[in-house]
Amino acid sequence: MDKCEKTLLINDFANKKFVERTEWRELLTNLDEDERKALLQLSAETATQNFGKGIFVRGLIEISSYCRNNCYYCGLRCSNATAERYRLSKEEILECCHHGARLGFNTFVLQGGEDAKQSDEWIAEVVREIRTHYPEKAVTLSVGERSAEGYRLFRKAGADRYLLRHETRNDEHYATLHPANMNPAKRRECLRTLKAEGFQTGAGMMIGSPGQTVEHLIDDLIYLEELQPEMIGIGPFIPASGTPFAQEPQGSIDTTLLMIALLRLRHPRALIPATTALATLSNDGRKRAILAGANVVMPNLSPIDVRKKYSIYNNKATTGNEAAEALEKLEQELNSIGYHIDYSRGDYK
Ligand code: SAM
Ligand code: SF4
Image 1 (spheres, rainbow, N blue to C red):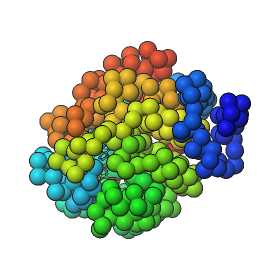
Image 2 (cartoon, rainbow, N blue to C red):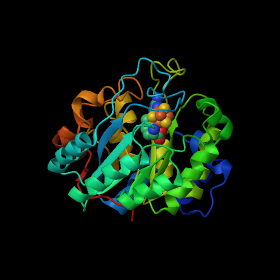
Image 3 (cartoon, protein in one colour):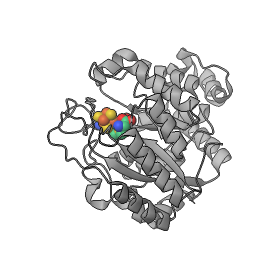
């Protein structure tokens, strides 16, 4: 494509009924610095049109570092003998919520490995208890693949949202990231069920996971067009010690930002976080994500003594502006780029 055609594409692709593979490829691989800047700016403007300058905050509670799965990329994988394991009790999770409520959070995100000791019934009970104390607040779950009955139970208990990244839409790529007992079709089935059960549903993937190609990213973009998730979580892959991918290179910050911008333009109302992984790789990662169209930040509300133990990748940021206690500093950081914290529930509209 020549420069004129590219400019046209950048300005028009948000409104296209269908984006061709060749067009996605052009946007991902063939923009010069000025075109890239123009795309990111358009994306930031789209976010502002939909959400103003407010950035939603969610209090992230990491409820268990035990996991029965063995994803090759994740520090919590069951074969990682060096991982430190813990699981929070119902009382500890509630204490986190009370602390978060005092800080002003209106959404709690309960995330963890697939821990057999935290059964569907147990999680539903925790959600029910949170909703009894805080009927007006939102509860998001991110506890992996569960049965349809499990998801139904969570919904009935009052969970509003569910995060389950599809990780990659390409099945061959999926098979290089996961052991054979993990099935990408099952994961996609979970996502369909979650949507059907009425959850605001989040999908997404790591950027730069080992073996990922541009064609895989295009597969992801096309899949997300079909699924139409309410939330999209993307962050760079970061190697984790104790995993088969410990020596693999980390994902690119620039590609992550470009993907955020493309997704914002195609999913203008989606809730897209500036992820901890980006903040881990770069001091200004969060700000750059917001300037590329992200509109959510998820400060860490877990008990301080377990934050380091939830070690999905190396050197995970848990202090500074990643900590729930540092909302004032986060506010200042956002103010420095013309944004502010929005404390409302921040539902998909
Ligand atoms: N167990 C649940 C699941 O897998 O959906 C929730 C917890 S899991 C740690 C949350 C997300 O962390 C995964 O979906 C994955 O994309 C991301 N993740 C895991 N290992 C990572 C790594 N090394 N670098 C970046 N992100 C990673
Ligand atoms: Fe478990 Fe999730 Fe890590 Fe996979 S990504 S090992 S399911 S915690």
